[in-house]
Image 1 (cartoon, rainbow, N blue to C red):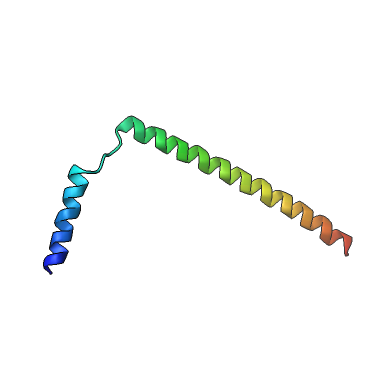
Image 2: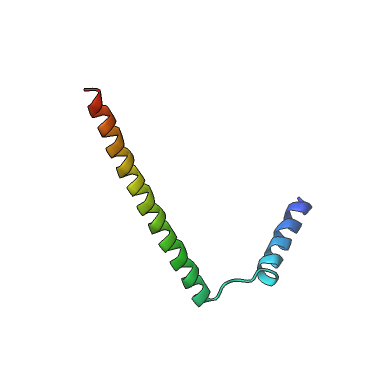
Length: 64
């Protein structure tokens, strides 16, 4: 039990003393980067889905 409480104390101390938290501007920039990257990847997957759907429809139409 002593090890668990020491671990919690050490973790708390590390969060307060050793971790550098981003300021508001850095947080906004990081959030914007993640949002833009998510939208780009989503658009890329959507285009790949449309392309594969079209290719498969064409292949299936050949065998009707």
